[in-house]
Length: 427
Image (tube, rainbow, N blue to C red; front, side, top):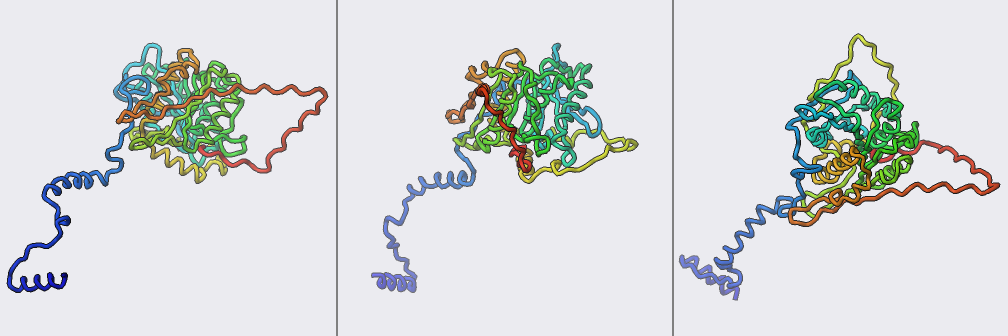
C-alpha cells in the first residue's frame, strides 16, 4: 500500500498533477479546534514565564490603625547627633510636635547591620506615626567589641536625649520610651533597661525584641552577655517575636531573657511567634532577617557625619578577634541588608509593636494584648484565605528552688568550661 501511494505521488508530481491528501481525518485539525486552542496557547505563552502568575497575593499594609499608613506626617526629618565616632541618628515627622512631646523609640540593630537603611521602612513608619526614633551607632565594624556595646549604647542614647531636651521640634517625651532590638540588639536592650537608673537613662516602658540572638555566655565569649536582668523595672513590658525559620536559637534566647528578668511579673511578658505562609505568591517567610526592611532614603551615606578633629590625638586601639564578623554573621548581615517589606513587616512586627507600645504607655499589661483578637490577626490573601495567625505564649513563672534537706551537703560549684562556647546564631 505504501509503495503504491509513493509511486502514484511520484507520477503525479512528474505530470504536474496535485493529488488530494490521504492523511487520516483524525490528524487534520478542524478550523473550529484551532480557534479554540489559540486563546489557551496564548495564555500559556504569556503566563508560563511569570512566577506565581494567577496566585493569591498577600495582604498590603493596612490603610489605618496599628501598622497602618494613616500617618500624621508627610515626611521625615533626619538629623545627626553627637561627634565623630559617637553618632546617634534621629528621625521624626515634619511639623510641630504634640504638646506632650513625642514618644521615644530606640532602635538597636543586629550585630554588623550598622546602616539604618536596613531598617528604613520601619523607621519611616514609626517617625511618620509621631514617634521620635533614635538609632545609636554603638558598633564600628572591626573596631568595637561586643563586651563594650552596652556601655557605648547607653552613653550615645543619654547624650542624644540631652541634646534634644530643649528642641521644640523633636521634643522627646522621656516618660514614654520603648526599646526595639533585633537579634543581638535584644540582649543589648535588656542590659540598657537593667542599668537605666544607674546610667541616668529613662526607664523604658517596653522592651520589644525581634528574633533574639547573639547572647554570649559571659564577657569573654563572642556576643552580648546578659547583665543582671533582675534589675529591670517591674512595670516594664517585655514582648519577644520570633519566626519559624531558624527558630530554635531565637526561642532559647527569648526564654532566657524572660526567665532572667525575674522582677517583671508574668502578666507583663508575652512571647509571639510569626509563622511562614506559602499559600500564595510571594510567599511569607519568617526568617531571622525578616524584621528588616530596606529603604535607600535612609542610607547613612546620604547624611553628613561629623569628621574627627585632625588636632585631636586618636584614642589607643587594640584589636581583638571578636571585633570582626564571623562567616555566618556576614551572611546574615547580607540577608538583613537585602530584606524588603511584606505582610510580616506590616502585621507581625509593625502592628504588634504599635499595639504593645500603646498598651505599655497607657499602663496596661501584656494580658490586654493576648485578649485582643486583632493582635494575632494577619488578615487574608487576595483570594480570601486567611494568612496564618500569630501564636502567643505567656512564659511560665520561674520554679522556686527546692529547700535543701536537713544535714545535706551543699553541692559543689560547677567547673568552668575548658574553652569558650561557640557564638549563638543570629548575633
